[in-house]
Image (cartoon, rainbow, N blue to C red; front, side):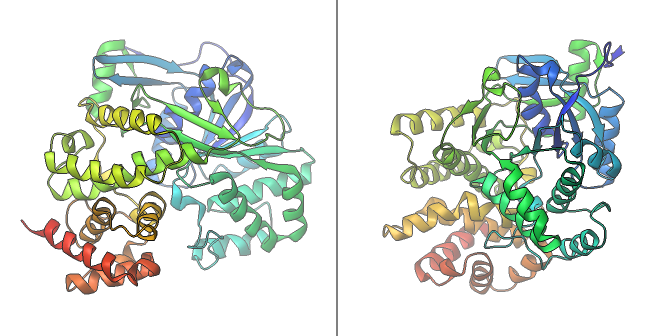
Length: 457
């Protein structure tokens, strides 16, 4: 049995990434590794926040010199490849390393995968300055812009302040989370915090830093001990950092880059003037379906997405949701049909154990961008779509203790609101999540009825 170690120097660091998770390793790092100029674009990858779990991930990857195996799990079998694009691995508290890379003019790209909640946005999309962690970071940066901070917006602002002080020049930030118009969304929170810290820094960022907008798509479940054992048996390599993913992958990018970037287009990425049609297709049809199945499917006792695809009732719910969401997409109908067919195959892949309890995390952040836009458009058209209201009803039931365990950044606020009588719970949760929908009696009645049906044995 062997272990992964480099037999030559890693590529020079020109790309910094924040969010050292499975998806990044199966997607952005994979695309960079497949680019023809990969030898020029080493990645320095950081955890986004300190925790025992994320530090263990970093330690395992460091022990392998940043190398890891991507297991691509098709219905017919597995393929294995070693990805070599991560040149350096760091925990979130390696602050001097973070500032050191950002002050190096050779570093020209920052990518991020920190989840929707990681950008600390308020309901209106601004930086949520009422959050204690944001307030603490703001005070820290006002006192000393080189001091260590915790939140993602503050890490970015501190790095950019150091870059300005060093005269290291422009760069491009490329967020890769499931946020509509994510480039503009991240630019907004960074600018908001920078202006509160130092207005001149905000002006410098506005004139020097570019933001790309992206759509990312590749299902990447958490690897299990069995996955690692199977890969070791097949390859003879003991890999503590392997990633399991599906054959399908898509990366759509728009925006002007301030300086250089890897040739991702030669690795399969699509560059376009408008990401929105691709973004909506993916957010609503894939991510919205995932949220629906995570809550409603786990209530029915299922563990994985593939399990739900063998349940006729879940399939009916899925088709109803897709029918409602598809009416508001701007890509051609033939492309929508093809994407739905591909999703059906991807979801049903029995060799991809994509756990519903993991998909269910942070519903308070996900439903407003995955489900509610379709519900609002349907109501504006005079329709009451059962697929969209069911996703909300299943989430309310989830908060009431049905199905997957609640793991949500707003759990302390939302779980008590969901307690008590079902009609009151639905009204309280909807008022907090979407006051306009809480004022729509037809929506409220539909959610109550569907939640009551879901909660019945």
